[in-house]
Image (cartoon, helix red, strand yellow):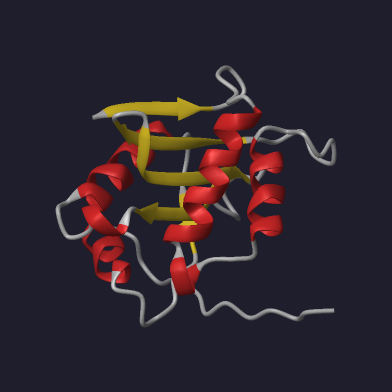
Length: 147
């Protein structure tokens, strides 16, 4: 298995970004977003939106040049009062689930991140137990106002 960390020092080309976007779109399943939103997230990760000075990183696990797991973490540009990082997307290929790959991916992301990490997880998502085992806690109830 090959592990690649994509960041501002190692930016994927257009074909590689498309492969990451497609992988996330298909393997996030009911916990995912529209592909256009995934693409916006990836653009933010590589500071292509020119809206903020923050960026982020992506960790991908590959087997025979095929993505088998991916995680996108974006920097918030804040510290202390808001975690420095937000885990936006994490997915494991359906054929590789239940084999510890998600745990390995999360441990890699935790090691690579500078500062605290926040994530959102739906209460019925089976991955919630993994996050709790790794030390994530539920400090707040999230509320949103959508315009």
